[in-house]
Image 1 (tube, one colour):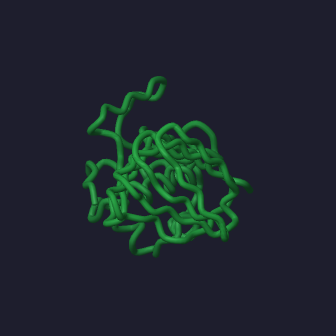
Image 2 (cartoon, helix red, strand yellow):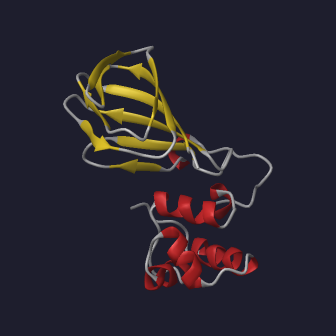
Amino acid sequence: MRHLPIEVGSKIREIRKKTSLSMKELSEKIGVSLLTLQRIETGKVSPSVVLLSEIAYQLHYPLHSFLTEERSVILLKGKAQPFIKSHKLKLKVLAHRGALDDNISITLGEAKKGEFISKHKNRGYELTYIIKGKNIFNYGNKKYELSAGDVIYHEGKDWHSVFAIEPTEFLNIHFLKK
């Protein structure tokens, strides 16, 4: 978990109050307990990048504005870009849901040889561009071998998973469908 400046919690509280949301309402919208939100707002814990992104979205407030005062230009230097890392892969959040549009998020991902993204579904559509490497994309009962330069576009409503045959880098754009 990346620790954010303590002011992030107070900014969340300030924006939440301006939007006339109670702590209970916001905690329900973002899917955390009231106690967790209280601990975030008081600076006792730092939210994950994913949670901060969801808070920003629910408050209709740009994610980067929790980290900087500049609002007309967004520049996130390489190391300042938020990322999500698990034992399966690394995702760098280039544009969180709500940064460009309420229905679009963009991530840059890396997976080592032999790693996979387990079977999952999601709302909307995904477009993935393979920058480097090779992987097997499983969609329903079909398998697609993807290599550098390939693009795949699909509905997220059906089960899909990915297995990296080689170290892989990819750009993923998720288009949320309401």
